[in-house]
Image 1 (cartoon, rainbow, N blue to C red):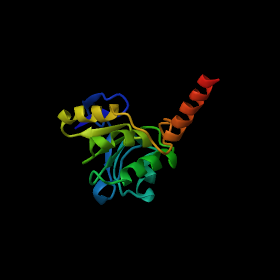
Image 2: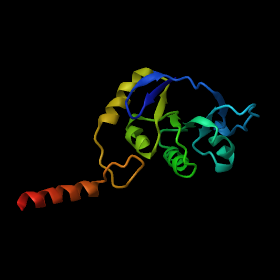
Image 3: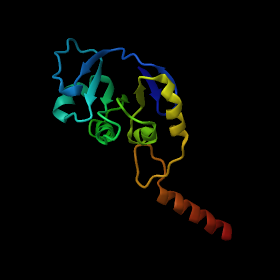
Length: 160
């Protein structure tokens, strides 16, 4: 697997570097020995009671998407950032598509995992494509209304 950073577009081989607790596919957690750092792998349908005991130990959370149109991935990323105040890395894996790149970045995902590193170019292009948004998100970029107000204020100053 290769990790594509959604902020920089950098591609690197992904090695978890810690014990992986796999809760994806509805697996029951194995007893985890010790109190060292974990990589928590969860499905997009993960419930709070499934992950609560692991989030604070996780140095990385991998969210496994079921298919490219599964909006629960973005909801879960946002929930982890807001509800748990999770500040470490969140990566998304599974059949996600480059058109989701900017949206995943906006809700707080740090990276995507790609099985084929040749697909990284498509993702980097998608990250460069300018987007205009109607609502606020974790990245604090201006919404379309804010941009419109800025433009009208700039026009008022030029007329004066």
